[in-house]
Amino acid sequence: GENVEQHPSTLSVQEGDSAVIKCTYSDSASNYFPWYKQELGKRPQLIIDIRSNVGEKKDQRIAVTLNKTAKHFSLHITETQPEDSAVYFCAAAGGTSYGKLTFGQGTILTVHP
Amino acid sequence: GAGVSQSPSNKVTEKGKDVELRCDPISGHTALYWYRQSLGQGLEFLIYFQGNSAPDKSGLPSDRFSAERTGGSVSTLTIQRTQQEDSAVYLCASSPGQGAVEQYFGPGTRLTVT
Image (cartoon, chains in turn cyan, orange):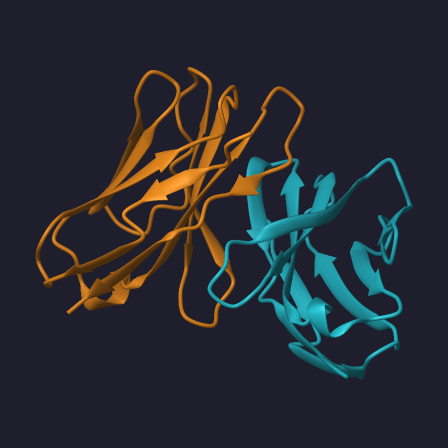
């Protein structure tokens, strides 16, 4: 089955800096890669996703890049703000695991004012 | 519109008891998923329903776990003879299905087995 590795496990940045979180996946047939933000005690919220026919997608301060050959994808947050502080999860789906998401272990992002 | 809802929000039960957790998906969503999130951990897939197809049960950790989805809408996750290691947050998600795979999560049920 699919295996997703996520790094780093914790990330601390100053307000205004950029943050990058990276994930690798194992199933070359996976074709859908969402990112979720989870604040303490809250539900995971979908913040951006990318499909395998696209190399990059942006939405305001966040962007996701996908390298199918290397089987890795990354989340980029620019001009970070304290409210960006949360746990971020990457996930992969499709191919042999169609429909179900396989999640990375999460990255605790802390943005210091 | 209304999002995914789950009940109860918290459940404390004694080891060996059975529990039922409920999920109401977003109206019109044909796909429904259950995940488990242990303290400080990522999300672990449990089971997936898509329309009238047979569910994908490949993530259920033991035969003590089962789930059903009645009328293509509400789903119930049942854990029999609960064990302490079952303590976790159980999250439900739904998606429109049929090629639209974005999953939207409910608030979860925090299960504590004493």
